[in-house]
Length: 259
Image (cartoon, rainbow, N blue to C red; front, side):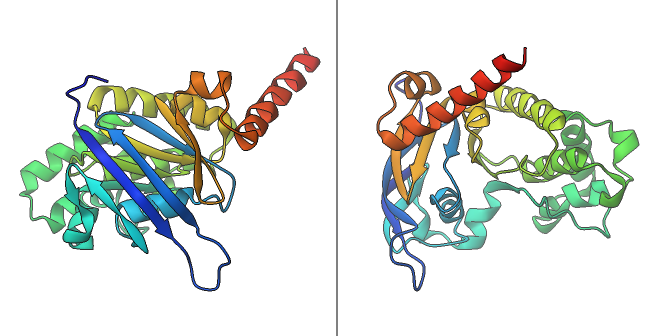
């Protein structure tokens, strides 16, 4: 990244604890993400990665600390405004079953009162961008799509109003292995063409290392390491990161043993 690249997201000593818990879900996260980076957040269940993501678009608020997007503290902005500036994709997709693909993608542009010609143009553009033929798919309903196709439409919907930041919470977790690899490649292509800032949560180390320009490794609410995939593999910062790398290497040995 260039020295002149703007900082897209700053987490300033962010803490979050849920009622009745013995420890923080997010514990002192303090880091900066540059505009245009593809950041993957890796950790096991309960590590705090989804909580961190949800605080970024104010689905949750931190107990202490600040989150700053392009120089603006999100505490000073209404949650609705924050969310309209950020694309958000989740594993369950959440497409409206009674709406066509075109209507699903157009939800936020309609809320923002875009004119019909602009909406139609954007819907066609995005459907093609995620690798689906508009003339074939725009009139379909979600039930007429495969899981992978639904996830593509969820991504198109999140991109509809051209957000600078995209948050993706295990979007491929329920997708079969072959489609998952295809969607990973597609997402890398889309990111490369758009130059947006992506935050992608996963518990799959292979996915995290493949997609991330840098990777945040979390455990028990803390950031264990924030670095490039190469540096994480070559120089794991602690025992937890080392155990993740070891598990990956054991998988490699298993596959080698089958050949």
